Image (cartoon, rainbow, N blue to C red; front, side):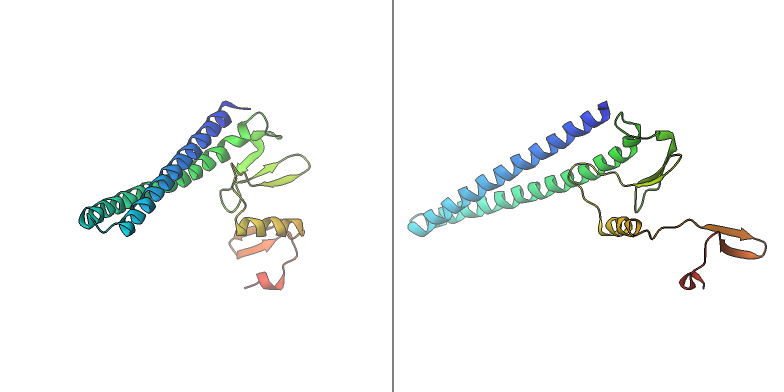
Length: 173
């Protein structure tokens, strides 16, 4: 396995550990706040002081919740960047089953096309637990149903036309 995938794997593990740690701290703070609220109900003595402490805890809770939200956003953003890096490196890894020189990046809705002597592969590269988008799944289904064809779109002095396949009525404008 290539060094790029090892580095990517370490990065994913680090992001996951940070998320778990922030979730743990969030739960600890929540439990602490619940305890203070129980104390407030049990004793009206020092009510002002307890209300101040609750306000302080509420502020800390909001700060931790904000930090957790930012961390989750950063993790998701990192996962997207990691996915983009994986997409670009995948054809050049030791485990890529084809000649990477015959891979062409498309970008969207699929990552690319791999050409061999006897087959053309439409390739979507995924990292981690990512899944196909609805549009990618629809493209996969259309290919599986055989609803794929090759066309030549010719631009010339007489205008434009689609050649090299029987034109369907819904394509004619």
